Every structure is written in structure tokens, then in C-alpha cells.
Image 1 (cartoon, protein in one colour):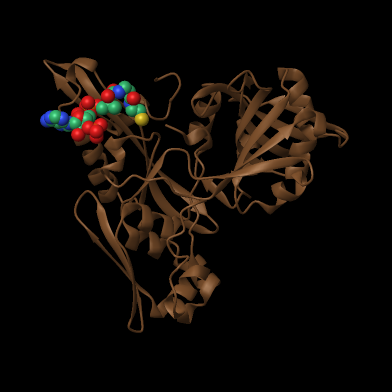
Image 2 (cartoon, rainbow, N blue to C red):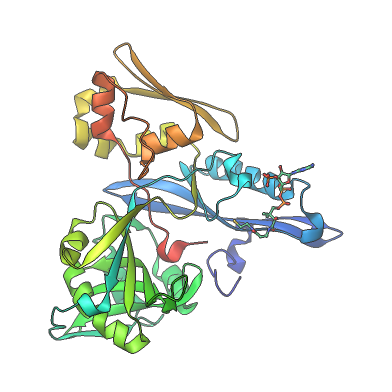
Length: 353
Ligand SMILES: CC(C)(COP(=O)(O)OP(=O)(O)OC[C@H]1O[C@@H](n2cnc3c(N)ncnc32)[C@H](O)[C@@H]1OP(=O)(O)O)[C@@H](O)C(=O)NCCC(=O)NCCS
């Protein structure tokens, strides 16, 4: 796992790994990375939890549960507003980890990519050339903040999320135009087309789509599945007429750590959506203990809206493709919240743990 997840297993950041030992031998592990993300102009801190495992002989004694609780407490103390956990399990559901977020997966067949490649070239990004690639991220509206040293480690491990893969730079006459991180082609369930999964992208969407046949030829793929933000209109437009897409929540589960902090971090965006005056009239409070948010209440001029299940309160704040707890709410507070929410979540991409 150290080879596949170099940032989590960084010898200089060992405090990210918390273990139980039995007679000096590690028997249970939970890894947590704290990251700052910028989302539509706002910055918040998130904790990404992964590498959750317990030695088979030590399972069922609450070790992983205690380590997840420990991760929650430490992340909240370190100023994180949200936790992303890379898995679906009762272990996380019991702690308020639920599906949330609004993303899309575009399904593209190579045979439908008929636009000319038009002078674009493609090359894989290496740790030595990743500075050019990183610059393309600066203009992205939603991204993990990464420095060059960390990005070089992510590139060097040749993994894209939890699969072998590469990052590709699309260039026109040596000028970086776009980039994407994608795994190696694999057949779908039941032997479907050989599909490359794109987990992260940046730069000009039109250039990226035009360059896809080059990647398909080099890797021997028939199709692409492209994960993207729901708000990415440039990608939507570049792919219109040739693809179908599915709505999906965030990969894994999302746990709210501190809704008030999240609301505060996103105030500049919310003020743009509903106006500073309306924002000033809304108060947000949560009922929480050290480990879990039990209820979230919005209040405005005597009107009150309370969400009291993890599914409802998380989907109200962060959206969900199928679960829309605000949909039946009526009144001026509900009208304003419809405009203010949902807040964006980051896609894992290379920051998956
Ligand atoms: C998933 C995994 C990490 C759980 O580790 P664990 O240390 O056994 O976890 P816990 O003991 O905290 O919880 C396991 C279950 O035992 C139960 N449990 C905890 N303490 C208990 C106790 N004292 N008595 C009886 N049951 C108990 C928990 O309620 C939990 O039930 P749930 O799964 O229905 O929520 C472990 O099974 C594992 O390593 N699996 C393989 C790797 C993996 O799948 N990792 C997760 C990736 S998302």
C-alpha cells in the first residue's frame, strides 16, 4: 500500500497512520490525510480516510471503529469540516458516513469521437515534467491543493485512484492544453468494451476530447468513462450529442464533521448565490457530540428547518442525485436554501486514499 498510496504512507507524516498493536505487532490501521481544497472560490479543509484494515484474528473487537473515531476527533481538532471515506460499510454508516454529492460519469465510445485530432499531441506526465501539468490545475474551479513535491509522488506511483494508470498531457506545439489521469483499459462486467476510466482532468475540455482517440489507440481501448463535476458545462458541451451520462454521488461516503465551519467556509459563495443580506438572516446550528452530527437546523426570521438523519442533513448541504430532502420544504427559508445549496464536494482523483 505504501507504493500505491505514497502520500498516506509518507515516512515524514507517520502521524497520519494510527494503529493498534498486539504485543508490538500492528493489528489494526486507519489512515487519514488532511487536505485543503478550493471549491468554486472557497477553501475548506477535508480529511480523507482510507487503508482501513484489521488483522482477521483481531476483527470484531471494535478496533477499526475506535480508530475511525480517533480519526474523526483528530480531523475536527485540525479544522476539517468534512470527511471522505473510501468505502461503504456499516462501520462508517453507524458513524454518519453516507452517500452525498453531485457528479457525473460520461460514457464515450471511441467510434463516436469523430472530431479531428487537429495537431494535438499526447504524452505521459512524469515526475520530471509534472510542473507543467500542475499549472493547468491552477485554473480549475474545484481541486485539491497540492504542492509540486506531493504531485510528483502521485505521478511517480503510476496509480489512478486504486488502479494502475497514468496522467496524460495534451499539447499543441509544446503548449500544455489539457490533462487527464486515467487507468489502464479494462473490460466491463460481462466482458463489455475495453474502457479507460478518467478520474481527474484539467484545462481545455475540447482539446482533451479531441485527443482521446490518441490515448485509445496507444492503450487499445474502445471506450472512456469520464468522471466529472456536475457543474462542468465545458465538458458537457464538448461531449454533447456523442455520449450518455449518469448522475452519481461521491465515490465512498461523506461524513460531516463540522457543519457550522463548512457553512462559514462557503459564505463567500453562498453570499453570491443569495445575497449578503439574506445570508446574514440565516443562522445554522447543529446538534453534535464528539463523533457525530445528529441534527442540523436552519433558522430565518422565526422559520425553522431541521434535518435529523445523516442522509438528510448531508444531502441537504452537499446534494445527492436521488435524495433531495429540501424538495418538499415550503416557505421563504426553504426558497432561499434551494438557491444557496448544495455546496460542492471535491472529487478524489489522484488524492484517493
Ligand atoms: C472492515 C474491517 C476493517 C473491520 O475491522 P474491525 O476491527 O473488525 O472493526 P470493528 O470491530 O470496529 O467493527 C466490526 C464489527 O464488529 C462489531 N463489534 C465491534 N466491537 C464489538 C464487540 N465488542 N463485540 C461484538 N461486536 C463488535 C461492530 O459493531 C462492527 O459491526 P458492523 O460491521 O456491523 O458495523 C475488517 O473487517 C477488515 O480489515 N476487512 C478487510 C479490509 C476492508 O474491507 N477494509 C475496509 C475497506 S472500506
